[in-house]
Length: 627
Image (cartoon, rainbow, N blue to C red):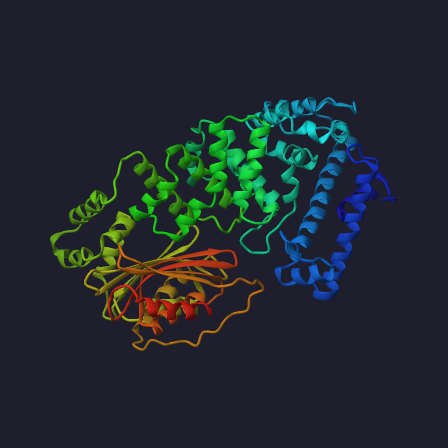
């Protein structure tokens, strides 16, 4: 707004802000913009007076919401209501800024790229036809201000029921198949208020946020980002790491099915409750209005209901275990469902939070997708060890007879280790085993695109997981994922940790990697295991810790699932509890979701080397709930 005020003074010699004659903004809209501007000024003054900042951080949002008189409602908390109002104000000012810049271009340079439509009585079909023409024209998206003014004026005169007619709803679906400018078209439909006329429930999620670090955007902005990600993937304007997905998305029988799933998957959040189930009800109303065929309607409803399923399995379960994949395919029972769900999942995550998407998460999802596809196509079956045997045979071929002792140690590892470890990593582990030093540890730290990979091979020992967690915590390294594998004879542990620095992320040089390696080796040379006094760290968010423990009869291990607020030392605290209760970790899956974590551990009783007894599980759960 400051820039606009300056431009009005300098470029237009305009000092009275009560009214500016911009065609696409009527008197009432201008009044609302001034009101929004005054609210922003009051909010900024309060932030500076109370906290000495212009930033509405998580730490201040709750107190500001209370100060402004917002009360909790059934579907939204007071802070979410406050931020919804703020996002609405910011969005309207942003839209006005866009129109004002266009106004400057058209008036100062007489820059008009298309013929104006000046009638104030456009039919709804005519309005949508304008967007259809733009969508099928390989030119930059542009609608002049006079035409925008005509569209807005006409929309106000059209009855709500007309927007919900079958022909208009079908026209909207057809719009999603536009060859060009789809993202810009959807954005303009929202700015004009057309989108919430076509899909009334969309208006309920405009500006809606969730008070967490997991969701970076309001629900409506997230929805646009998801569809935009899909569109960019379809026209091959994405990173080369998504090459497979680009090919897959162009082979979909109906791209509009994916776009509709992207538009509707979170619309249920405006109602409160299970947004997936509510989203299905919202979509079914749309499907009836548009007279969509039953097969398309069923598929989109299924995608909305299960849009979190694939990411949940990839993050919580071992996607290299064929039993996990088999269970997954019981729900995702056709290749068509799998293709659509995979593409929806990837673009949903990419549109939620830029820090959430990384090559590690991509690899997990791709592994689950490829394995599921093979099972659905009956290319592999449960219990098939051909892949494991192939890797073992290649290792035997690569390494000579002189390395028999090292090979024998490696062959002591369980099948699941070979199943989830690439041949390249197996070769690295082979060399690390050869250099296992007197202290009983061999380390390799690799730098990948999004994270560091710590390969740590050591003699198995009591409290190994706690020792590693303490070391990493001291080095300000947080664990993204952990694969812990113990040899069948219990003598050797081959551990792979995906880690990143809490402050520097992945911006570490080779000297940093050497220092990390040396510090870990030095810590392992210390015979005594330090049981650090680890306290809780304050967190502006609230989340009730949830712990589930059950015995897995097939693996003879106990599965511990922990959902809790993320803190810098959480993993060390969990490891300390395991150690003190004489429980060893067999494998772990660490998942960070904004301000909270979902950690899954396969553990066993140190004394019996089997699953944990029911009484001990109950005691363990009580202790873990105090995290």
